Every structure is written in C-alpha cells, then in structure tokens.
Image (cartoon, rainbow over all chains, first blue to last red; front, top):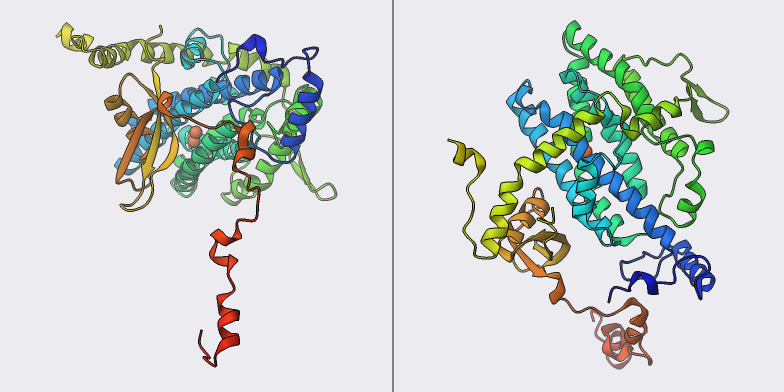
Length: 331
Length: 100
Ligand SMILES: [Fe+2]
Ligand SMILES: [Fe+2]
C-alpha cells in the first residue's frame, strides 16, 4: 500500500499537486492527524524526517553525558533514578526513530548518519557535564526546556510523531521532578554544594538559552512548519514560555544567572535577555562544539561493542549457531 | 550494516486481566520472541502490565482512510441503540408507578 516515490505527485508542478496541497492544508488546519499512508507534500515529509531524526539523535546523545555519571552518583537512590532516566532517554530515541521511519527513512540509515557525524543533535549535548551539579542542571532545566518543546510538538499534525511524544512527555515528568529535586538538594546544601550548582548554572545558561533554536527573525522554515502544524509555536515563543515558568523557580533557590540584560518587561509581559550568538549555535550543532566529536565517538563505540548482541539475535532467529561475545572469546 | 533493519512487530498492552489489549506502538525484532523482550523494555517500564501481544505488522490488514465513508451510516441507525427508545416516557404514560 506504500505509494512509490515517483507516483506520489507530491511536488510543486506535479499533476494535481495544487488541489491536493489545498485539501491537505485544509484538513491539517482543522486539526486532523496525518497518517503514514496519507498523501502529503514532499516537503512535509522531508521537514518531519529532518526534525524527528535530530530529535531521536538528541535523546541518544543526551543519555551519554548522564550515563557517564551513573558510577559517580552520590547516593544509591540517585543512582537508581539516573539509570532509569538514561534508560528512558534511549527508549525515547527508539520510539522516535520508529516514527521517522514511517515517513520512509530506514532506522539503520539514521543511526549510521549519527555515527558518521553527518546528522545533527541538540546543541546542549555538545557541551561537557563536568560535575554532579551539571547532571542536576541538565535533568532539571534542559529536560524542562525539552518538555516545553515536546508538549507543543505532541499536538502536531503527524500522527505517529504525536503519539510517540505523548508517551515521551509522560515519562519526562519524572526526569524534570528528579532534576529539580537534585537542584534543591544542592541549593540547600553546604556552601561547596551551592557553589557547585551556581557554577554549573553559569556554564549551562548560554546553551540553555539557545536550546529552542534561532530567533524567529533568523529561522526561515517557521512559517511553513506552523502552517502544516508540524510546529505550533515559534522558537521565541517556546523560549518565553520556558523563561516565564522557570526563572521564578531559579531565583527562588537564590541562584543567579550570568546575563546582565535579563529583566521582565511588564508592558510586553515578556522576558528580555541578551540575544544568543546564533553563529556560535550553528557552528556547535554542525559538530564544532567542545564535546561534538566525543559524543559521536561514544555512540560509535557503543554500536560496535553491541554488534555481537545483534549478531546473536540474528543467528538465533535463523537457527544458526549463536556467536560468543568478544569478551568471552578473549578470556 | 543492515543488521537491525528487522521486521516490525506491533505491540498490544493489557493493563489488567479482563481489560482489552491496547495498541501502544511497535518494535523491530528478528523474531517474535525477541520482539516480546524488546516490547517489554520499551512499553512496560512504568504502567502495570499483565499481558502483552506482539503481532508482525505485515499480518495486519487495514482499511484505508480514503475509504472511511464505508463506515458511514446511510440510514438512521438509532434502532440499534438504547437511546433510540423512549421506554421510560411511554411506561409513565401507562401506569401510576413512581420509580421507573
Ligand atoms: Fe527524553
Ligand atoms: Fe528526559
């Protein structure tokens, strides 16, 4: 039932394209969900694949700095919670690759592009998690920023993505609360703990302010993405929503932020801030961040070291002798 | 490469005995047995689950959304529904029972 690419007539100039596009935009505007077999403009498919692919990669790469801290968690309870969060994030990636796949891009290809350093992932995961307080700040504020984005996207027009995001958002609630709990512990702890938290926040604030992507005046795709209900809010709107909800909580913990221009504009009912350096943002997501190469390398290593599991599963499924793991062979 | 582009299995989850199995998503797996293991990891990390089905996606035959009009009712089907009958009103009109 999958239509051949050449028969889709989904590009401007193809026979009947304009009428189909009008009908498509009509139903999307009514809040109808688009399903994999439905007709959709080629650009809708391309934009969604691009977006979901980056999203899945970010779930995987986000688990890397956190995973590295599991052996160093300060208490057993924190270790359990961090393990659970990391497992969730990798699960989110699987759900999302599957959603992207319904649009025609094979999962293998997406995983390979990440390993080859050809695919993007969220700017925030190109930075190092230096201390335990970084883990707390990531879990609280980066997950908070992600929840703003994912809750909005879960109302979007593409059925499989929207359903995956509903499930993801439900799990994110624990990540956020656990992150907040870790930050409260550090904020109300010893002077050293407070200092560690403040230092982590100082280092993370710039990447966090860039998290929702370039300012509206700089992003070219926004209008189309919103018309097709792929996105329901602009980057700046998401950033404002995040600031409104979390700045009061940050200040309540008597923490400060390294932005002298940060102030609430009563008249506009908006936060004012120093515009992030979007050239730096683009350079970072293109792979020039402090940890870009390291993240891709870790992912590659994990993929290679897990090869024997996939080989064993394949062998068992086809009644072939199951190979031994390399560690067993070596010993 | 091409070692995990496995078959797709649709996953159905039952939260309590007696309740229906509900579709929750899908997994890739080389066979049904591994599909169950992967589905368990992916879809029962939190919610209660007493039973799970995995079904090869290709085993499902689905109607097309374009053909949704075949489910449209051509005629009034209220005679199939409880609300299609006015028994209380009609019974009151007959007798003098207060609680009906
Ligand atoms: Fe996640
Ligand atoms: Fe998360």
